[in-house]
Length: 91
Image 1: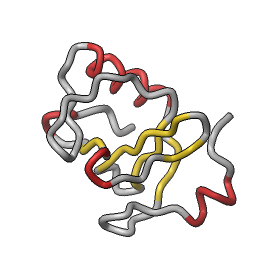
Image 2: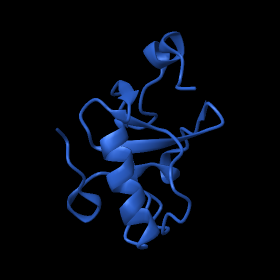
Image 3: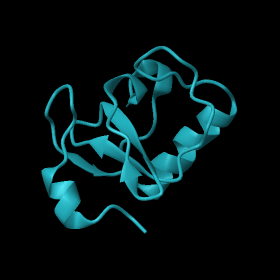
Image 4: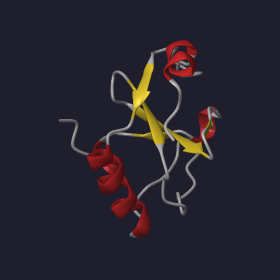
């Protein structure tokens, strides 16, 4: 079950305060493929080992936050930066 719309409306990136939206299935699949290959690091520099069951992405498409059991993980160091090293399709 995705994050509820009323919660999504009040959540924002804890670092930049940019709004969030639900990560599309296509982007999640692509990111999870890179996670499985050991190619993704979080903001804290650690390799992300667990695939995302759901995610939130900043509206500027720069950072992904994990959602586990319908609970968003908004810990800044655990965000996944979407830049050249973790590039995913933004369409």
